Length: 108
Image (cartoon, rainbow, N blue to C red; front, side, top):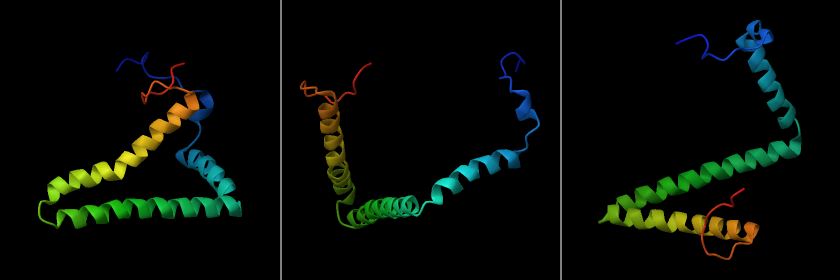
């Protein structure tokens, strides 16, 4: 690879080690997580997301263990994601004021 294609780094980056870069990154996380309210919000959101993922996996196993489970799995997937898609489309329409009925993001 020719040297002209490679990005040029500022001289200060050349003297920094990986530990210096990681220390700067973790300092930001520590500062944010030092606030109790945010820490509780982050923990609650994380537990909720794990629970949502486990629910879909458990429902998938349940449906696949029944006769004709593959067809029912397709129906489960549609029923599980359709409200999210419809809600997203209605949110986009309400934010943009569009009445065309299409679910497309606004153009700049």
